[in-house]
Length: 516
Image (cartoon, rainbow, N blue to C red; front, side, top):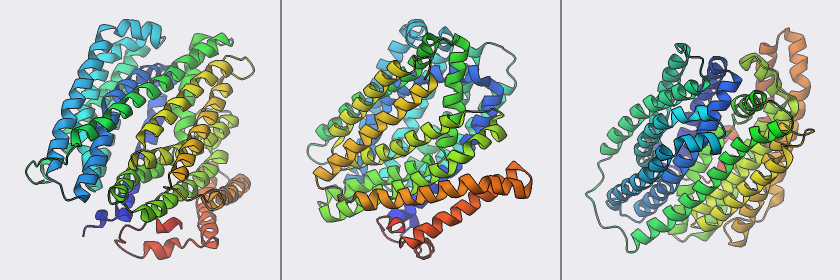
């Protein structure tokens, strides 16, 4: 058995891949912020709002159906039906893409001026469509491979894509002599398109190399099951990402209403989305890996009708999300202002990082509960929860960001309240349907204790190390390493033996024994 055939092996491969992606992406944002500037990043972020809405509408339901059904059908001994699934997924994606592209091209000036609020974003839309078309090819194959346990192929493709994207985008921005900020968004999307060409080619070659059995009839009712996943998830993603993108568009408008100039409002959006948020979202590499492998695993247990193992698995998955997400965020909060100065050459208010950190932790819980709900076939509830949370956040942004005494802080407060409600609703639904044990002390107590210990240590000893070593760089490195050792010690006090777990190679589906 290949190591990545086990749950622990797949999680390890994806964690390593996503950590590499996160490190590359962080460097990418550093250089991009220096070449594009805060206002240029703000214009790109507005254009990106249209991109993520169209991307979500065309691909979210299709990719989830590919992952879930390929995992279920392979567990039931029907690998030949996966070929039919992939063909159906491409047909559905093409239908969605043509509809979305027609609307975007026909009304791009109207969308740029009156929806996104900045006419400079219109120039990027044709390149954006090329990028989404190539992304569709990559994502259908990649999500199918994740369902078939071939996460190694997905990891190689993602890492290659990120390296090409960084090189292409930074080269285009470096040689750009046009002062038009709208042209900066065009160049960034052009770099993304180049990287998607490479990734789509790689994933096509890898899928052909799987040597699946000849196409076989899918299980009875497969078409209805496919549509029952694709349609509600796609509709939810379209609405939720539309509302989320509206929040990014509404923020500059509300900041302008609070007394800021238009340029300052767009620059504030660039600071939050291009500098502060990427720093605080560094742990998402680990959490997204966990969610990626947890959803098909939960689908397998649900398909095999094994409620005891399903409940054990979901409990440990939620526990792992907390015991990774909370301490990692607690480590970053006291260090983030120094990281912003050292890497981005910008002073960012510390309260930004506090509020974004709280929002990130709550989003991690929302992510993991949502992926488990989708895995066990409760996607309708996950859809309603996500939509309600996004609508609540948009309403709060409108109400709070326009107040002169809050401004950006109102936007960040809204980002904390909405995911908190969604995470609580998702956890309550998992408990009520018997898929998650009710153990708040275990699921929250240990992560909070670890987080408090790491935060207090880093808050105090970062400045001690800076004083002893005479520089921020060595102080930062020593603070991170010592906090990591403290974190492992606290875990050991709670009975989590990381060294013992890691010494068992190729452990079978281990239900996250590392964290329990």
